[in-house]
Amino acid sequence: MSVAATARADPFFAAVCALGITQITAWGTTYYSLGVLAGPIARDMGWSQGLIYFGFTVSLLMMGAVSAAAGRAIDRHGARGVMSAGALLSSAALLLLSRVQGEGAYLAVWALMGVGMRLCLYDAAFAALVQVVPSRGRKAISYLTLFGAFASSVFWMLGHQLNAALGWRDTLVCFAVIHLLVCLPLNWFGLSRREPEPDTPVEAPVAGASDEAPLQGRDRRIALTLFAIVMSLNGLVFGALSVMFVPLLEASGLATAAAVWVASMKGFAQFGGRVVEIIFGRRLHAMSIARVALGGLPCAFVLLLLSAGNVQVLLAFTLLMGASQGVITIVRGAVPLALFGARGYGMVLGLLATPVLIVTAAAPTVFALIVDAGGWRAAQLMLLAAAATSWLALEGMSRWYQRRRSRGV
Image: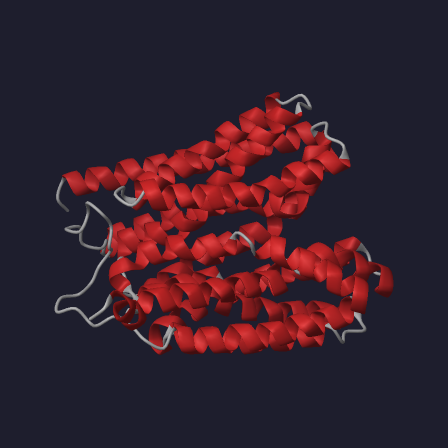
């Protein structure tokens, strides 16, 4: 068989490319939509910014509430159907959002959007790739996240242009149509084939660890709990930064224009971190990659605390933080695959995502309260403490896992 024919026959390329495009589209039209539309909605409807962003918080809480059920559905019925249903639901929610007139309806639509997002964003896509190519699940996850780094950049620019030309309501209609015409067919056809079933069960495809059996019983419960704590603490950091990053840079001494420019470098750093992981991390255990990625975050926040308004130091903080965040996205899917295997992977991600999404939803409010009570310095110290505790928790988990493996359990 020729190389071209082999590439066409291999579901890896089709699944990664299809889901890569759907992730850019799905994240951009739903999760990041308020990045450019919050202001126009608030001005047109006369609502507060707090109400506008509370809708987003409602969606994250709903994602957490349905996460475990979504994971079970993916394992039971397959990610293809679940992600296609998520595309339909998200498109319908965007269309309904474009027609809302009251505050209650606005919040209710965001709750519906949360269900749709849980069915078609990263956690569902990671599980889909493991179902399609279980022997190369970690590699597929790494490649997929390269696409996602561009979601905000593409759709913030597109949303800005559409809003200027059509207004926010018709922009959401366009988003609904784009979501329906792009995500639905790509989810359905991109996940239509799987690699042949092996003669023996496929477990975690981790370089250098192919002889490791998935954790079971009490060890499985301990590892799930520890990793949920690690990712929840990490969610506290990035949940706050997702809406407060530019104000944080301004409070550190940058003018607004400079803060926006420095903040824009985060996406490039995320992409760069993921490329480095793909090139140099392929032979490392997923836990080792996690230790490096999470270990970089406290270092980044130390730079922030010492920056004193220096733009070069704040740029270094942004690049280090962005690179760490980019790799942590891979870690979120790769560590559970390495520790628990491909069987029941959707349910594992669903269980892990529940506390993480709840903490992420609460993070902006907690961060804002700390700023109001103690100022920006106190908020920066909170970010450093959460990042350091997350890293220390992972170090403890890693040592526990190594001791367990050294005993041959």
